[in-house]
Amino acid sequence: MRGSLCQLNSFLKQLVLLAVGINAMLCHATPTQTEAERFWLAGRYDGNRIIVYFQGVKFKGTMPSSPYKLARAIAERFFDPVQLPASYIAQFQKGPSAERFAIGDRYDLLLDYGKIATVTLTTLIGSEMDEEVGNDSLIGALATLNEDDIPYLSKNIFVLKPHRERPATQSKAELNPDAVYPGLQSEPVRFGIQQQILALLESRVKSKATETEQLAENMSPTFVVQAFRLADSTLRYYARAAWTSGEEQTESWKTVYALGAWIAPSPTLHILALEERTSPYAGLASVLPDLLNVVDLGGRKTGIIFGISGEDSGSLNLAEYRDGASLREMRSLHSIGAGE
Image (tube, rainbow, N blue to C red):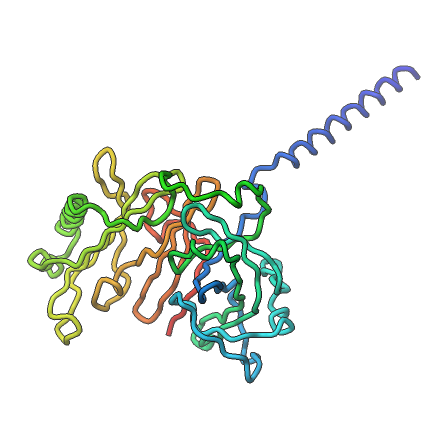
């Protein structure tokens, strides 16, 4: 009898230890074991509001017949919004992956200089797209910033994420003029650096271009280089070059070759990854991805916002930047766009 009791006590102890272990594993779960944090593209709507589309949907011709039309946003690529009632929006918020947003909800807007502004949803909106050719229509909201945060709207496109309470000292942190912040740099890249980067691109053209494209060697390219800093403040460059023949906006105007590159400055300037031409049209703005902003996503992750123009399509995109990867290889976080 005593032996049976000892075995029972031993078994109970093992159960307790197992329960404690399982509880510890649940309490210390890594971020990869939980649902990934959501991010959305947000554009400046007017002086103190931003516009965001949370979800692509299919209206299927059911949108209210006379919706209240709103003005276009200051930021481009956010289409034509109309005000929609909460009862209509609700029917698209039932799926497990749907964002259940409502007037009065708060979100965090990631701005320049590491600033995180809390915004409040004030108007529910949508934008009806041409669904017959495969486009999604969009539902979202306008959100209002606090007056103290408005000076940080130095660009037109940002990133929105779910709201998290932060210590008061962190939310009221003052801008330090001597600090190095992640993001797209406003200062022009030094001319000497630009010359070195252009030489790198010209060298790639000689090795990659076809015989027809090698005609570009006799043309002066349109060239743009942007500097940006990653979440850890590391410096990077994004450069674009287009070799074009003919006079701009004439029938002979043609981009012969185009190439973009992600570049690191040390130990010497070198190319990390290349971007290829995205459309058959002419002009630098149409043929290569356009870098619009760089944002600190938190957790030492860097988000890059870029626009892409295709032959009959266009999109605004948010991706997690990664050294050595082209845009198509980076992790996509959010995108809004349309095709014909």
